[in-house]
Image (cartoon, rainbow, N blue to C red; front, side, top):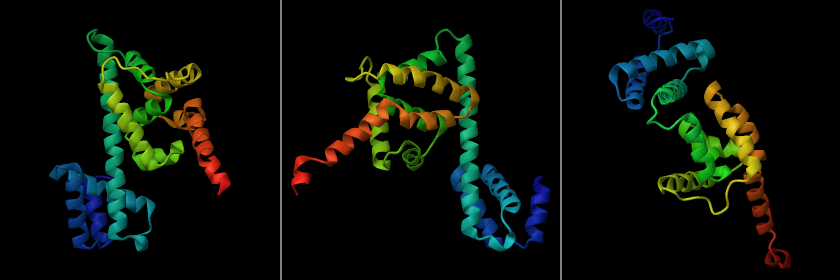
Length: 216
């Protein structure tokens, strides 16, 4: 559906003018560009037309659709940039290869740090989304990301407890597959089963049943 069709549809469905102005301002707020913001608002209306009956529409719903449309655009753009950088690295010997970058993540970080950082930076998952997928609290996700960034910024530092070899063997192909296919679903499914995740949860359970707790 092109822009003219959208405008006609908007008119036919009698979208309140203040809604349209609100969506344009919201699109501008998200994209930081007037024309991109207008296109974003129009694309959101198209999606709303295809997905929701008009009697269910509200300004809050259209803003929600606009936001998710923007997130999809950002993620798509980030993935395209990532593939461009990977392609350039194949022809530029001064740039680290994709394999070298993955190896750096998997040798300098713990399994949990590597997975969380990879999903956050490459696929732009929000902290609350990662918390749901990885069985962690949102605060734990933020703390894990902070530790991962600090460790990566410190040249030459290595984990006090290196990643379990079995976790490494599982994660490396999962990371590569996620990059090649633009789909981290297999990684999201397998990561919580790794020793680096299950051992932490087991420790937390043991700590919660301390002798003092039992005595109480």
